[in-house]
Length: 131
Image 1 (cartoon, rainbow, N blue to C red):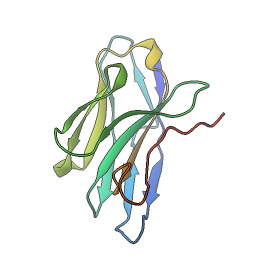
Image 2: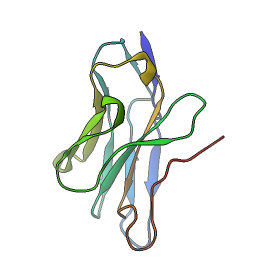
Image 3: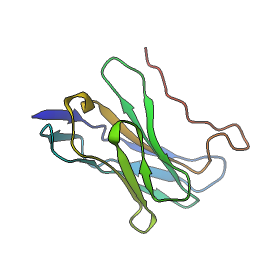
């Protein structure tokens, strides 16, 4: 079995006078057999326009942006065969991949923002490097 360690963090943001936002990843760890379908859940709450992101951290590496929803098509395709569907009515942005590979073993993080990267104010999402 392929073990994918998943962050189970509740992250709360309170940006610049806008309504607070939060993200919940309900699964602390997910066990997936190699070759099976992988799904990592992300639910959010926001009182403002929502932009949602998935990041991945492979062993001994910094965070990398996997995919993001800004606007437009709600089915978002990311790198390495990952995809997520933005469902505003369900306040979800679940990450999916089929088939899962051994190289997918990593930590995955969902985040939400009310600011588009690169917009006025200089807010920008860049991979973090913890090395």
